[in-house]
Image (tube, rainbow over the protein chains, first blue to last red):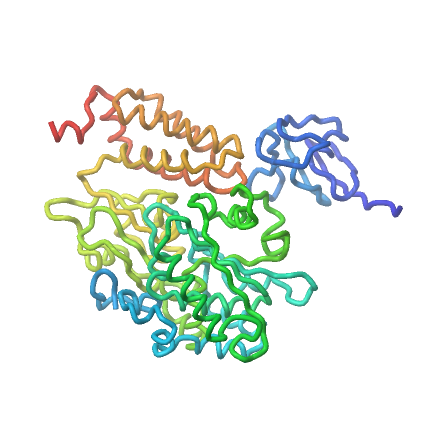
Length: 81
Length: 437
């Protein structure tokens, strides 16, 4: 299997590198940051309805649900704001 | 011809020309009034050219958001091997709005023609017209119009003898407000509960049945044949204010005015003249107090703001509100703003799909507090609580229903705070009940 492309981003000031297509919530877990969530579970399809996991993404107009938003190169995410 | 009032000289009847004329409903009547010439012309043009004409005309979505229609169409990529769909959003449920209903009741063939042109331009094989469940009369006329068009060979496998395939289905909704939201409409069309989907992916990528879909409002699609026939420049010139808002807009006026009804004026028309001249001003002995210019989900305007407004997308924003769907609700000095706002909040609490926490809890909580104030049991802290709830409901949910509930509440409290306060301070009896007693 071909190696998946890695994406670099910053969450709460910590640089993280995760495979393409990962959600911000999962990427934060890799960085050791817990984004609080209710309706998200890795074994279930994404509902994105509890709105507990909303995070601030730099240059995005409004808060993004971190469970349903995939990471992008150079993204800057703030959780505890 | 105007409906139900005679045409006012300052109106520009483009879509409303045949309102009130029963003969325009039939295929023959519509053809003798110049119908289906736009489609005939469109089928002889290249698909991209039609999109470009619409783009040049500056036509923007008439459902509320005001997204440029030509740009939306250009997101579709015909010939990528997938089925494509066109949806016509006829689930007009915004409180105070009844413009699409009139289009479908009086000129159903205008919508069929607009849909057929759009379907051809974006390469959609199938068109769905999603009509609100309560609209029994428009449904009747639309079904009849589509049947007639099939029988005449305008639609079908060989549309107007050109060998192009255009299929059209009329779908009756079950009467949920939320199904007017584009992704909820698609869920509902597929046979599921009308819950809005998370965006992205947008409908142009994954819409009905997971396939590329374009969704447009009735009024938008009904304007397309005229644009093709008369040209983009003609449509672009119909603006009194700025080049970003072009063409005409239907407004449905209701509430405390002398002549409620559906009016059509060009973009940039002065709102003051519209209310006092076209709509006949306030009822005898009353004065206007507030206006909700675009259906219940836009900020409430005070009269000072309304009188300074030019009626276009930017003009309404400049005066602290939005054009929305064009459902003008006029409120006069005999009404209690608290009652009006509490009723609006109750509507949204009832119509929330209850997916997102902020909306499910927020709309119900807002209603509870507002009705408490209305009944004379409110406290001063309630007003600040309402504003705080409203701020947390804005921009944090999947769709904008939550924002739609918060916006009239916040704007109403900020602009008419004294009415809330006087009701809270000592006045334990409701003003209307007091007047009756």
